[in-house]
Image: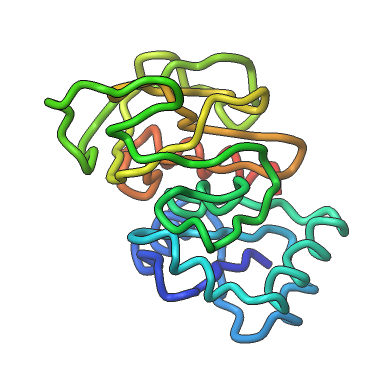
Length: 204
């Protein structure tokens, strides 16, 4: 089962449609215990980081238990940011902490300030810079374009497999074992986005 998590901050209809297009049959669980039968879990998200606070302790525990059993997890947009330790957008809302670091507003970066001319939110197509091989990126190359819409971004870390630059370079794709996340919207990124979802679904 592919579980598509609904916490009130995701464009579920378009994500579901894209997953179906690559051969998945996603369901939206209503209770945390329904994750027990999930082989893959998708955490989408748009909007404010504080919305992730709706994923309460029971859902977090069920998600971690599913990962411990070997379920694959894919975060999308705010879903990626939630997999880090947190975000300056909502300092009192903890992330899941699967990856190290804090997400920051695109107009600033640690130790420096980006150009005041930088338009935020970042909305539109931007190219990927593939940093290291990953099964998630099979058939995807540096320079391929994907669609972003966000105001906050995650830092570059050891698990960054692809980055992009808008004001400063940040993580576009992170992956470790069976946990992965993308800052862009694969469901809106044409053939490249569908290829990534197909790669993920094949791995699941």
